[in-house]
Image (cartoon, rainbow, N blue to C red; front, side, top):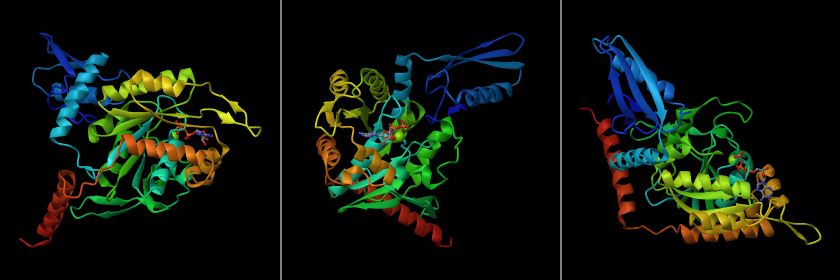
Length: 382
Ligand SMILES: Nc1ncnc2c1ncn2[C@@H]1O[C@H](COP(=O)(O)OP(=O)(O)OP(=O)(O)O)[C@@H](O)[C@H]1O
Ligand SMILES: [Mg+2]
């Protein structure tokens, strides 16, 4: 069973505690019990096949059946803890500098404005002179390229170690810069992408491992709607990532967002703050309307014990800016001011530190020098 690896968590099923036992009949019939993190786990088929292949090839075994059960939330927490401990011992080599603050913008529900918040926060941070990376983790439903008005194709060149290095596309805002990768730069917007489960995760993994991010202050990750595989993958690959949870003021959205926050914490990601979006609309007559209810952001913040970072009003400038590829944050007016306040709140809860001479920077340098050294060594005959 040690040979059966959960490809997503990168460890074998024994180590992860997913192997629950086996019943071996006198006739050589074997029944193996496997506990999965989710019943609908897309890897279920693969893990079952691997178990059958491995056990079926043992002498004396006449048949193999796999029984799967779903883990309790406590068990899931333990599995994630083991996967994390393992990742800490041998982390995936990401190209994200050690000093970069990684913020995943998430929500339980779709359409609450994650992508709008992400691109506008990126623009507001860049406008303050920060170097911002933006990873569009919504592999199947990407919207970042359109919202930033970026078109083009990602190009990969072999790096010093022979692995490809993907150059992000660049958008300049004021003195700052946003470096962007998205599936939208790999395939046309209308083409259905049939990646599922681990493939979804792989897409994000490639973006973390192979993109030449350069020195970033912030890396914002625009998460797909819902929770699950991508979030777990992110927790495994970048255990230091923090979450910003977007909710609308409505009670229903707030409840779903609370589940997302709960899930984040079970995956050991710190929730750095809550952002309320679509909170109120001021009409031409100056009257305030709570179109989607009120108070959801502060209630959620209180419930999960994270600060409410900003309330972003419903503004035509935000959706129009998204459609035009000109984030409202780069303009003036109420929307731009709201995103400016959000950026300041983010800098306050997740400050970037100047790490010249400190260990994080030194580690990056050491890694770079090892890469160079290996490249040189590879180039020398003998
Ligand atoms: N504050 C706002 N004011 C006006 N329109 C908004 C606001 N926030 C988001 N929108 C609009 O709402 C729609 C959904 O927003 P967006 O795509 O950012 O949500 P999402 O959470 O990323 O969705 P998905 O779950 O599909 O990824 C978009 O058309 C966007 O322009
Ligand atoms: Mg989105």
